[in-house]
Length: 346
Length: 182
View 1 (cartoon, each protein chain N blue to C red):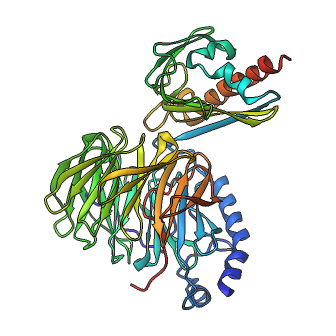
View 2 (view 1 turned 180 degrees about the horizontal axis):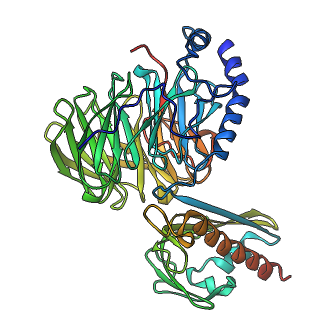
View 3 (view 1 turned 90 degrees about the vertical axis):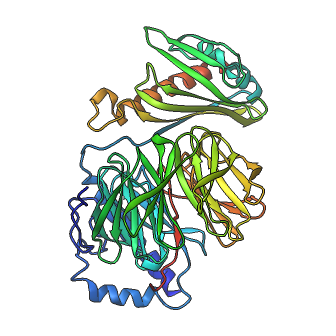
């Protein structure tokens, strides 16, 4: 399949809503580079870069940027239409947001919290993930049954990979050599070999897998099945399901705590979060009181849960599961993906 | 410190940019996005009294003015199927997914919205309050009736939100009237 046309980050977006949000009006980054340089000196001082959570707000077409040191929204960035997927690619210093309705990827500079580019992205981009070194970006193209690939430095489209029906969640392994994609309507997960841009294996999972999460320490992949209400635990060396863990209704997002001991899983239809012991592979606790929770990510000793119904983010203590505070975000918040990051040098 | 100040200073500008963007949004073709409706009503009565009125899954016909019949095959047991017939025609089939008498809430779902122009519809009704001040919240999550690009006007996002909002508002207003006796 022909890859979409390459697009330079500095190119003007096709429309409208993704215009660069410089305070003094539209200004292409190319001519504003000197200015941007000055800006970087201000925000990129050593020790000043606290991690941020980038929460996609599907109902308000923007991203709430939460400073995790302050637990406050410090910027609201207008992106494309109905943003859903997100990956904070720290090594690239950029955040990539999938906009299924405008069929684009918005690129946010982590240092300035500004949109610096827009990439055309097939027919309906959803799940999105970046290689750990930040050089490659992979995006599930829902309606076209393929995974799109991009060079993050230039925004150039690389050859796409044909996969099964309704590709949803995407996860790149730690080496960057394999990309996993949940083929929702085929009830399977495909493993893509990045070097050859081909599917090298496939494994059947539960019913309607949507989100995926790599467990680096255990060489595992978790596939969350929204219809069978369970998690398929896949041994990534053999590409086989080794266990199935029952959780709540419509599990949508998963995150591992920093020590890797606990897996936090959001259950959309139960308004709850399941806490799974990642060694014993069983749910040890169910936390109530969330609002149609979707995305979840962990940082330090905290877990951040995005409440789609309530338009906010719950901040939990990772060990106890206790809610410490809630942070108001935009409308219909999703945060589908690895939404926490801090700019690092590549 | 400098950084924090700088970012705060930038915030209003970003908000303005966001506003400008919203105005320029095109009404172009796109796939479905999940929508939601949250409606609440305050009722001057103890929560237990209000809950007694709505607690039975099959009692919808007793308090919703648009509902003719709402028989459920397994009462308040999870998996119970409720066949809702609307006055003036139209039907919905809803399945009880979660029932919590102590928390005074239940959730149900419908794969096909039937009379409502929605799909993959889930809904929760909950009662809470103190003393004589009770709040009833009814909320739903759903996709529009037309699953593909270019929906006809009667099956687009706006039509879906409007229909569910209307159903919740009329039901809650009538519940308030019934309980408060006004």
